[in-house]
Length: 199
Image 1 (cartoon, rainbow, N blue to C red):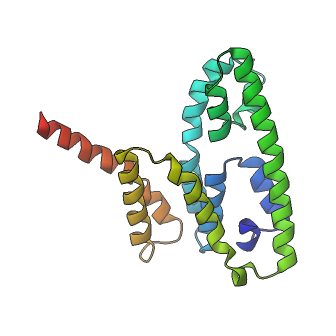
Image 2 (tube, rainbow, N blue to C red):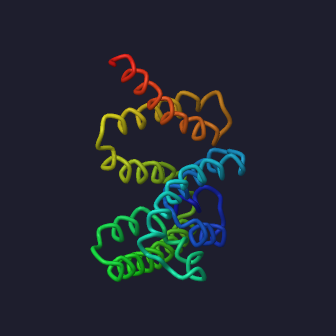
């Protein structure tokens, strides 16, 4: 519904969901486009948010040990949830089952609800009047908040918010998201300096 409310057609919304199967990246892309951002900048922000899945993939490739021909298809399902379920399993067989069942069920449900949401957005008309532009960021924050368990993670998140919001009025739409990616190296650099001073 957020995507359709940002000006994407029903077909574009469904294609985005089918091809970019990671919620945070989808919300970032749609949010930047809705704000009038450059499509390349919006795609870059979505890409950086999805990079974490590559790290999951490195670990999962060892655990799953799938045949080479199957790996490109399995890569589509490497997301937070499938990684969490697979990593919690005790045997290779249960890792594969957990990964496959979680991936298939989430992929089908995600795309089905995307279709229903897009159809609903078309049915209600002007989604701006309903305030649905806030749905994407709200969902993203709800997913992110429980994952911030350490002081470092909270510092990175806080600095990213400050950078993103602070640069919003002065940079083109989509660019503040990219600038917010600097939060992690900045926090880690400050931490390294402090630890060096303590020694």
